[in-house]
Structures are given as structure tokens and as C-alpha cells.
Amino acid sequence: STAPGSGGSTGTLTGNVTIGPLCPVEPCTVTPDRLAAAYAARTIVVSIPGGAVIAEAVPDPYTGYSFILKPGTYVVDIRHQGINRSPELPKTVTIRAGETVRLDISIDTGIR
Image (cartoon, rainbow, N blue to C red; front, top):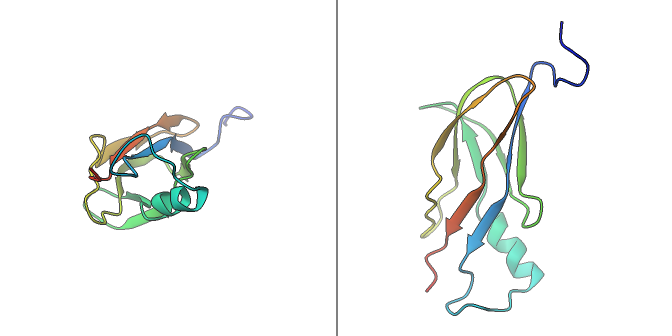
């Protein structure tokens, strides 16, 4: 049996996402629409190793992303459009029931 509030048979993968630079010269003023578009273009993708995508989500600039996943091993990456490099990705993570795995992601847009 599982203790109340332990999350049962799933685990959580969550984290914040930072994307930059968004202008050739920092600091810059980025409108909320432009910021939202930058995040919308960089979907977080969860797949099984060497296989199918099982979940994807657009990260939020303020709250990041979160997936509820069955226990197992997954590969986290982003949809690559243009120059998008992330030192953290692709990343293999192991999800355990009732646990939260945090993976913060920083994406380099290549804008200079």
C-alpha cells in the first residue's frame, strides 16, 4: 500500500527554463508576446530512450514545466529549431513513484 500523499504510482519531472539571449544586445526589452513566442518555439520533449516521444509541453517563462510520469527512464530534450544549444540536454532522467526530479534547463538561442 502507498502512504497518503505519496504520489502513488507516478513521479514528477519539473524545472525552470531560461532562454537567451533574445536580442543581439543585452539588456534588451522583450515584449510579453515575444517572450511567450520564444518559449512556444522550444517545446520540452520527453521520450523513452532510443524511442517514441511520450510527452511534450511548452515551458512557461515564469513557472517552467512539469510532467507526471510513470516510473522509468526517460530522455528529456527540446525541439531543435535553428541554433538552440543547452548544456543540460539531452538528459536522461530516472523517475520513481512519489518522487520529484528537478531539471532546470538553460537554452542558448545563438543570437549575438
